[in-house]
Amino acid sequence: MPGRSTAVLITGCSSGIGRATAERLAASGWRVYASARRLEAIAELADRGCRTLALDVCDEQSMAEAVRTVADAEGAVGVLVNNAGYSQSGAVESVPIERIRRQFETNVFGLIRMCQLVAPGMRAQRWGRIVNIGSMGGKLTFPGGGVYHATKYAIEALSDALRFELRGFGIDVSLVEPGLIRTRFGEAASASISAATPEDEGSSGPYSQFNRQVARITEEAYEGTLARLGAGPQAVAETIATALSAKRPKPRYPVTASARLLINQRRLMPDRAWDLAMRRQFPTPRV
Image (cartoon, rainbow, N blue to C red; front, side, top):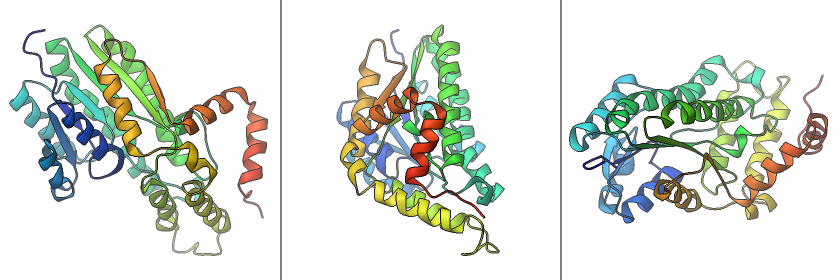
């Protein structure tokens, strides 16, 4: 369609996958709008050919204004990369409900709302691309990660539904499923356990030892054998670039050997066998 917008809006560009994707796409000639909650966190992306926007996926006004800014300049958001997200770790019972709500607000509700906001412009020009950043954690669950995994399972379902619902309007939806990506993700996930521990539980609660062990195992995963099956954020950026340039993008793009290995392993293992494997790696909370 002549004159259609191919402008790219990326959420969560302050570090890691979002930053690498903004740099990769801008270097390839895409018109990139990189966003983050704090503009100062992405200021240097302007020197890499990106336009920068303040965008908080937990704030309705912020999301609407960002989409309107791109639409006013370009006619529409042609490509949306839903990358903003983080991991809240800890045994489900031990995580305060307000932190669980915040996790879903960022990882799920923000993603849904961004799709709702950009879809009308894409429909009007009968072309668009939506790339949702999921995780191998949307296909399998590690103990101590239930809240985070729940959000990534939700993104799997949402991507499947959106792919069907938007296809007739010329909009393709793809889901990227990274495995272990060598960023500060593991460190942040580990830190989220301590931050979420209720003050009255301290170091003596029923899950205190379990949560400490989950934090240690998470950090070690980013330094040990599994890390060798991972990759840097550039691998995800390259996959997103491939999806956007494809005439018929795939529904799913697993990224890294760790993702392909563990997704297939989980698919083939009965639930009891998976549980046994997890008990060999993680401590079991008990009286």
